[in-house]
Amino acid sequence: MARRRQRPCLVCGTLTRNASRCDVHQAEWQKRQDQIRGSAHQRGYDTAWRKTAAAAVTQHRAQYGNWCPGWQVPAHAATDLTADHRVPKAHGGTDDPTNIQILCRSCNSRKHNRTA
Ligand SMILES: [Zn+2]
Ligand SMILES: [Zn+2]
Image 1: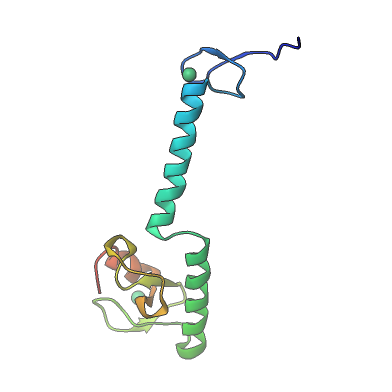
Image 2: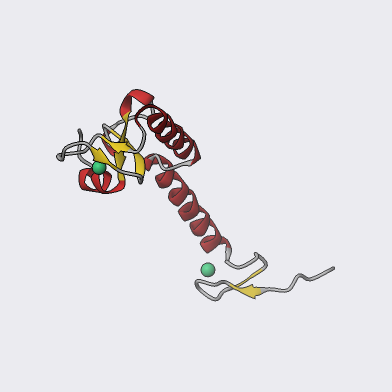
């Protein structure tokens, strides 16, 4: 009967035939990875959003040029345009184009998670 080499679990040191963790810590680690992926998705910063955001910026540029509508400041020229959720995802906003506005990076960070 072939014996696979055992390794100590990275967390508790118990010898295991798993790649790097004992069964208990393997399961725990997997759960954490799922949570990390899940929370990134919930915040809305997944691949789909990045595509939507890039398309929105491109469309804004084609229409208005490098121009930021301003948030609590008058509209101004800006090259570092970013797409922003009018209603933040955390507050139930969607990636729908009607919920996206273009702001420069500094206006966007000033606005942060507030609702426009
Ligand atoms: Zn362990
Ligand atoms: Zn701005």
